[in-house]
Length: 304
Picture 1: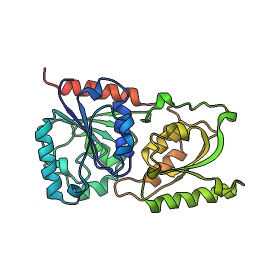
Picture 2: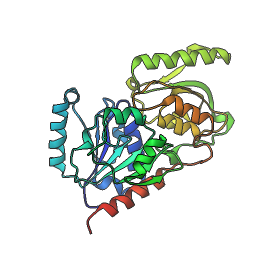
Picture 3: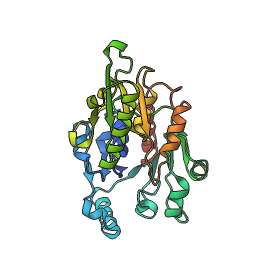
Picture 4: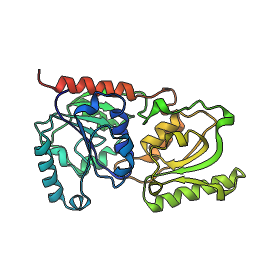
């Protein structure tokens, strides 16, 4: 690939950025012409895993639709991207890609989306739709039908997990520490909710709540997959990345999930799916297949 590719990973926390980094770190070829655009205030944590430049939309710009659109126009003009890879949102987190840069081909990594909420917020007539779609989990039926009618859709059966090849999921029982760990990159009040859930379960299991460990952004620990895989009890929200990791865990690791309300995500539905076997019959990581699909798709989009 000689052309520049924009990887769009806007959103709070680290979820969107983590997924993009998992794919970019899977192959040496993808990052060579890639730039990542993010908006999380936690971007500094991912520096050790950045295989390409990661740009951050200034916080003051995100508070104004006009300023953000002006920023995007200037950003696109500066780097002259030839393709755009969008994580989760077909028209961006605020609908910015519905009309922005309509001539630039775009690819969608389609995580579950509250489609009826999203489509009401950003009605679709006249909007530019991604040309190629890779579904990362089961989508809303209407959403999937919408995409299939307008784009080439490929399903990824295995989850995307950051640094999967470096994670030892088969540690012997004696190597696992009988510790409790709360992991979350969300706001303080959500962290406190998870701490309360963890302590409640610790008491039920006869463990001392004072021995609870946490991994929150201020501790500047990233990535945390190896740490998670070394303990027996993990408490977290129900976002894509933590559920994906839990789906590949051995039976002796206990994951306790709390589904937080999200405008465009249904974490309660993901938890229900996890309980009924989401990804658990598809052992292994989908990183390699997803990265190769991206390489092939971007190659097809490139002019001869």
